[in-house]
Amino acid sequence: MPHPLTTPTTAPLGAVRDAWATVLGHRDFGDDENFNRVGGHSGAALRISKILRTELGRPVPIKLLFAHPTVRGQAEAIAGNTQAAEAAPTTETARA
Image (cartoon, rainbow, N blue to C red; front, side, top):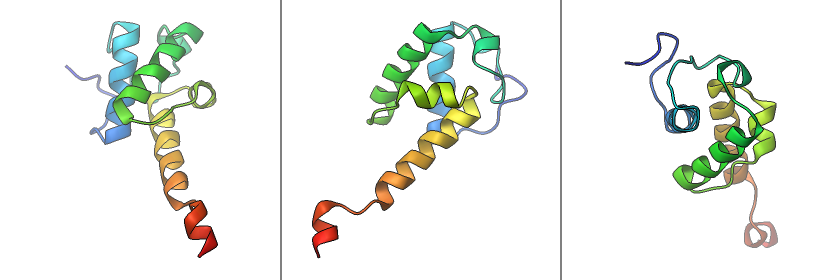
């Protein structure tokens, strides 16, 4: 049963939520709760980073997870990083 503070799933949001649940061993957290307050620690963040890399197919720096300690914040940061990477010109585009 989803936590009452969760919202409908988007790709990064669902992936982050599932990674937290896998690593923490429970789903007793909302999307805006602090990672440390629901049982998170640095080792858990490292495991989450690895899970998200596999699930999303791109690196998710552990510093991003520490800078954004909520499910929603992490998902938004990951989505923002993806959009920024897609908007950045490639070497070939820059030469044209």
